[in-house]
Image (cartoon, rainbow, N blue to C red; front, side, top):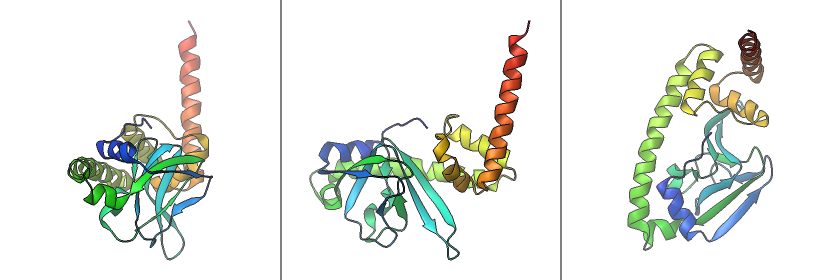
Length: 191
C-alpha cells in the first residue's frame, strides 16, 4: 500500500506530545477503552477490528505509515474497536482535547472532515468488494483499491480476514497467480 499522509495526520505530527512502540500482536487500545489521544502510524501497521459473539474478527481498517488511526473515535467517549499491531509498529499521538478545543482546532477539524469524506468513499468500495462472489474477484478489486500492492507475507492472514475469506482460500488464489505469472514470464522469454 502506498502511504499518503492525510492533512489531519499532518496536524497530529506537528503537535505530537508522545510516541508509542508496539510489538507484534500488542494492542494499543481495546473496544470500550476511553478515548484520550489521537494517533498517527509512523512505521509498521495497525489493524482496527471488532469481534463478534463467536469471537470472529472483522477487520475495519488496516492503517499503515502516515495514516490517522481511529479517526471516527475523535468525537466518541469510548473506542468502538480494538487496535493492534500485526507487526512491530511506531505511532505518534496527541491529547484529543489539544486538537478538538485548542488553537489548532479549526484547521484540524476542516482537515478531518476532508479525510473522513475520503474514508467514506473507501469504505463504500470495501463494501462493494465484500459483495463480490469469488476470492479472485475480491482480491482483484482489493488490489485495484491499494494500487496493486499486497501486504508482506506475514500480513496475508489479515488480508484474508479483511476480504472475508479463509486464509487457505487466499493462499490458493495467490499461488495460482504466481504460477500464471511464472508461466507468462517463461513464454515471454522465448524467441
